[in-house]
Image (tube, rainbow, N blue to C red; front, side, top):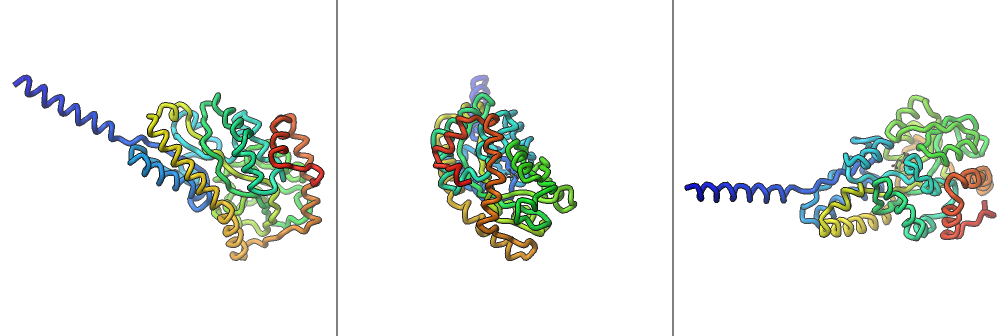
Length: 334
Ligand code: LMR
């Protein structure tokens, strides 16, 4: 009788252990943009592939549009292990104390996405990811968004047009300097608060890749958009290093495979997503969309190039020069 009870007890324990083993590993992936954006779609693709390749051993919960955390909080939540994956814009690493990342914010440092990829997929990209590890963060991938446009309620054609305007920026010293170079007044603000700040006139204008301008409906509260393409906005998909290193090896391998494919997908759609977002902004008729003339573009470049020099000691000469070298950047063209 006793033995029978023992057997029944052990069997129950076995089931419990099996049930526990079947509990999926949960990855909370938090981000601040809409699902219908390059980053939002990349996150959904990662979820689909990660769950498929691990046969359900991993469950990915994607929280879009700042539903869990706002800009600064999401990085802290990752470090504390409250979420396992986030994909902040590259501008968001400066406030973490990793200033080398601010190189991506320099105006006109990349002519096109190919130049950017030379940096992210080369030694500079690797070195930047290595610099996150002492912060308990592991860099998994670089995801594209696109080149930024300026917007405001007044036309932004000439450098003088920016004077005195309150312009929302991400928390980046380089972006702060960029707006000051145009004699505008930079205002740091969380992404989730920008629409309302524009609507109520707390700020006059901002900068965004078209996908964000469109999906956050900012164009509805901005009368003018200038296709300046003056700087780049993209992301680093990062995870909590302790969490990642603690995963069973076979699970981690499958997640890496899922991330590689999700990255390829996200980066393959980013350009078109931005082109169609810009077309939708134009079609809405709510904002007047302006393309600067060659002279206006060159005046803007001239006004903004000094930001590279101003920020060199902060970002580090070595990093800036490594980027210049990788892309063939020619300061004389500025
Ligand atoms: C912003 O704050 O403007 C961007 O970082 C938002 C984003 O993630 O694209």
